[in-house]
Length: 395
Image: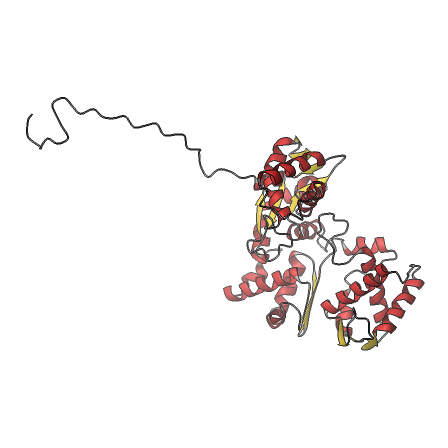
C-alpha cells in the first residue's frame, strides 16, 4: 500500500483526511453529541478516502454514517503494555452480559428490568452473581460505560442512582459496538484471538498496526519473518505512517519508536508532570548505568529501583507529592509499571528489563563542560613607555 489515496487529493483535503484518521484512531466510535463530534461532517465527506486508507494501510474496516463513524480496530490480545483498563474484569463481564440483554429489549427499558435481565443472562452463562457492593458497582460501571458511548441514554433518572430510571437504547450504535466475530468464536479465548488477528495482508498489516498502536516495537519481540520484513522496510514504513497519521518514528538497531509530536494520540505522556513520571525520568540514567546489559536490555532489580527512588526523594524533598512518596515500595512499583506501559520495561525472572529505547531519555550536556578560566597574563609595558604617554612623544 502506498499513499496514492492521498496523492489524488489537494493539500487541504490531504490535511483534513489525516486529521480525521487521527481522530478515528483515538476514538474508534465517534457519534453525534460525543467528544469531537464536530469532525463527523468532515469524516462523512471523506468517508470513501478514509475507508480506502484504513483498509489499505492497516486492514481496518470503517463504517461511516451521518451521525456516527465506527473504526473496527483489531484488539491488542495479551498486551501487558496497555494502561489501566476502563473497567475491571468483572465490569467487562457485566458489559458483555448487558449487550446480550439489550439485543432483545427494544428502544426503551427500565433500569430494574435491565438489571434483572443481566442477572438472568449471567445465570445462563454459568456466572455466579450476588448482591455484594462490589457486584453492584461493577454493574453500574458497565452501564455508565454504555452511557458514555451513547448506546444508552438516561431519559429519566440515572444508572448510578438509587431510584428507578428509564433508559433509551440507540439500537444502531448497539449493533456497531462489538468488533469481535461473535458468530465464529466458540470460546472467550478464541474470541480474543480472532479479534486480534492480522489484516488481510498478514505481516504487513500486523506490523503497521503494531507501529501505530504501540510506542516501541522491538525486533526481538517479533517472529523471524516479521523482524526481517520490518528491518528491510523500516524507512518506507516510517514515511508511510508519518504521512497518513502524522506520527514520527525513530529507527534504531533494536527496533522502532513512534511518537506523536502533538501528543494527541499519546495515552501515556512521557516525560510528564506527575511525581511518578518525573521520578521515572530522573531514575532512568542511574538505572541504566547500574544494571547488567544483555543484547541491549538492562536488568535491574526492584531493590535497585527502590534505592534510586529513595535517593531522588531525599535529594529533592520539596519536589514531590507527599502522598506519592509516602511509600517507597509503592513508588518504585508505580515507576516500573509506568515504564511497562511505555514499552520501556518488562518483567523478567526476578528482575525487570529496561529497553534499549530507554536510552533516548538519558540527558546529554549541551556542550563540553567549561573549565575554570586561567587568568589572562598581565602585559608589561615596554621599557620607556607609559599608558599616559602621547603618541609620537619620547620620554
